[in-house]
Length: 497
Image (spheres, rainbow, N blue to C red):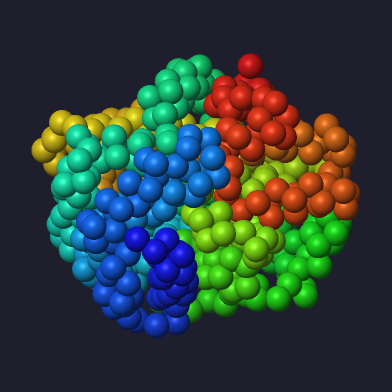
């Protein structure tokens, strides 16, 4: 195999796929023609190519950069092999989601993708429940079969490639110790169970007017929207606060070549914000559908963390380190900027908020809810993707049980297949939250509580960003501070101990 030719083709594929993703989910085109892109690069994901890459990885000396790069290529090829087998389903799901319309009892029609925004902005709880019920009915009727077939094909591919399960494949290819992570997150869930109601109840009452006893899943987008905080997070200061923050770190975002901030509302634009690093660096898109208030700040700064990382990667790095690697690293940078929006010093200096105690209490409740939810998602996905096949009704029941216990509400079972990202991405988020907590503490200890106004802190970040994702989170943290990655650090960070 000509590895240089493989890498060149892989980079072209990666760029084309991310550009297509941005254009479709950004609402710029109805088509989602990933099948055409896979067909143009089908040689990347044949069984022969994958076997050759595995042989190269097996021959590379352990611990060498060659072994690191080959391991990343194997993971890329495995993901591509599965992507090739599921491309038609991915494309059909995207097409249907973009075209489906849900109808409410009063004759109101909403696009399927608009439902999340509608829930966030709807003040009436019963109306929110009606919107969610219509969305879930449409999901069950039009999309569940596609999601089920998608996961079945993922599992079949893992077995075809020699693994006992999709779980084992992801653990092997991504060097993830899922059992160890599960043990840490289960411990976190157990230790926060008693403290959870006392943490979230006051914020639910303040935001929604009722507590856990009356909370429904349809209320969560409204809670996360936190409309009562809109005056503290004025939309006209969104871009300015970001530009000032980055300027304090010595980064001029207004003159960053190849970075596009897409904040324009469009009817078919996905409600889920994202960063599309088409060329890393050189062509990076930040996509946000504005909802309003605090959530816009939180989501925008998160995606800006991805964007700045991608924009600062050393262009001389090999393909693998610029595009591949452990995504928990880039997610940690995203959370680092996101968590500025719940930092008392940042709120005072950037938004002029003197007393931020209530805002921070809300952010703490929201974070705990997310953390417990993702701990439950990991537990569920370990069962979903394990070696023992389970019938859909049993999986749906287990999903509702685990998620419901984590958030302490009745959780709808209909999303048991939709609420699953490929490749155990939930594990990326969980490890990213841990890495970010350590990184933020490191910056605060070196540069003080206003570290975001120190150009030297910006230099530290740029040096980290330049490395792309060459290192794992564990390696990055060991080099940075000599510490070990342990999810338990979040207990102290949330002041729960």
